Length: 307
Image (cartoon, rainbow, N blue to C red; front, side):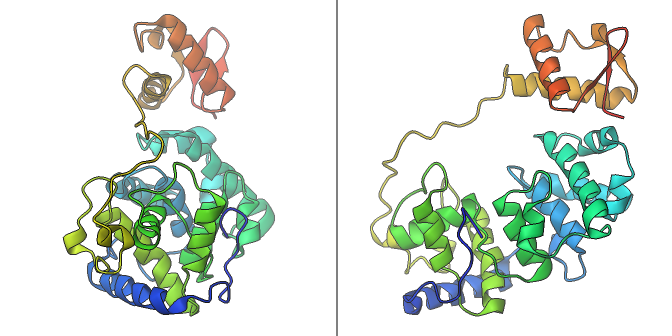
């Protein structure tokens, strides 16, 4: 399920060229994939998979793993997290970035307790109904936790398919219907092969078919890749601007949260307002954190993480 498209084994009739791609990529993953990651272990719980998928969005896995292990030790089930204060989740999130994800995880855990007996739901529809869960997370958890071959599409998958199947240097800036259809059409018909393909093609994009400096000499499908065979033409789409950080509201919000996490108690405004030289920006960011539910205002101009 991606962009409203659900997996259908009969969706594509052009299986012959794709079958070799499936075989090569899946065999490469068996040898070179990062199967040591704890959420890829066969005995990892659906909750562990769910946590990993939320934590790893826009975050390198090397940063995710230690925080994931801490959360799994502290809150090994949705029930454990649901019983904690939201501020504990924000504090334990550390510096993973996009801290609203910590609150969404807490809300999702409470929904699992209220609606599903403290378990991660095992259907794409029920997963998608959880707070903060979008199409990608619902599809990924369905596949990796429950073996349901939903179409899992992240940036890495889109890049591999754009190059291998379309001959493009990079995918579109945002996922569109054409890319969603390509991803669905590229799924293997066999359930087990499809589940392996989902993680294998994602891993290939993360380790080999990277955005900058792709290692085509290490790629198992370099000879099948339309982009590589065309001489690796340059990207000719709209400009792709990287996200700035220094001096942005994101940086200031992060500094405010860091101070509140480290303090482990409420802080007066005087301990927060020098988070950057621009006091107006500090107040704007503090207001936005309160609006997002990440910070709780108290009397006497004091602030804390949500209780």
